[in-house]
Length: 384
Image 1: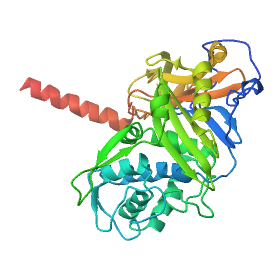
Image 2: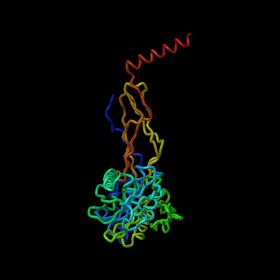
Image 3: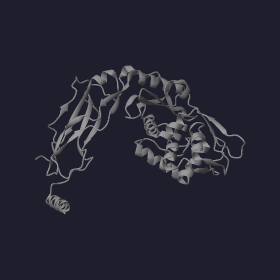
Image 4: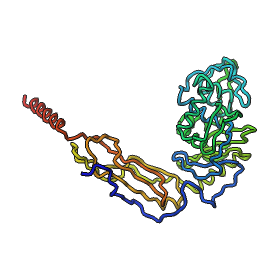
C-alpha cells in the first residue's frame, strides 16, 4: 500500500480559461491620483495587495510608529495595570497629553491618549512600563516587526519623533496595521472618536479627540493612526470595512493624506469584494489507514475561506485538491493528509490544509492483546 502522498487525485472543482496578469499587482489602467510619495492598499485578513505605489521605499513614518507601541503594550500587559510616569516621559516634545512626573494612570487610559491624541509622552511612559526602559522596548518593537514580516522597518523610539535610522515602508506599515487590527481591544481604541481619560490632581478629566478624520468622513471608517513631522511629512494608516471587506490604506509623505487614503479605499471597494472561495464541511475524499484499528476516514473542509476578488477573478477560480490515498497508523487528529491549492489562472492565491478528523491507533499485537484482556475482563464482570 502506498505511504507517500499521492498526487494522482487532482480534482478541478472549477475549470476556466487562464489569464496572465498577476493578481497581487494592480493593472496599469488602475492608477489612483495621489499626493503621496509612497502608498499601498491591502485587504487586512489575507494581506492581499490591491494597489501600490513606491510601497517598498524606506521612509520615516512619524506617529504611525505608535501602532506598534500600542499593540506591544496590549499583548504584554493587563490594560488595568497602573502606569507611573517617569522623568523621561514628562515634557517630551511634540504632541502630548500633559503627563507629569509621578502621575499614575491606567494603561487603558494611557493607550487612548497615545492613539487618539498621539501623545509622545504617553509613548515613552508606556515603553518604560512595558519593558523597563525605552531601549529595551525598542528592541521588542524591532523583534515584533520581524515576526510580522516587516523586514524593511527599523524603530529607534516608541513615538516616531525624528531620529536617524527610524524608518519603515508603506508595505511594512500595512502589515503591522493589519496585524494590530486582529486585536479586538486595539480596534476598539482606534475607532473611538472621543475619550475622557483620567487626570490626576485635577477636578476634571482630559478629553481627547481622535485626529483621524477617516472616522467621520468615510463610510465604514474604523481606524487607524495619523502622523506628522517636518521630516516625514503627513502620514496616515487608514482602515474601513464594508460588507466584510476590511481594507487598510497607508500613505507616507502625503500632503493630502486623508483624500489619498479615501481614494485608495474607494478603488478597493469599487473593484473588490470578499468572496467565498471554499465552503466548510465540503466532502473532499476518503483516506485509507494502513494497519489501523479503523479502515480509514473521510476528509472534509474545516471552515469557510474568503478572499478579496474582482468579478472577473471570481469567475476564473480553480481549485486543485491533493490528498493522500493511504496513511500508516497511528494517525493523529489534525494530522495533515493533503491540501487544496486555489488558483486564479496561473497564479496560486491560497492554500488550505486537509487534516485527519480523528485519531486512529495502530492495529498492533499490543493493541490486540489489550483488547482481548479488556474483553475478557468485561465478560467476567458480566458473568458474575
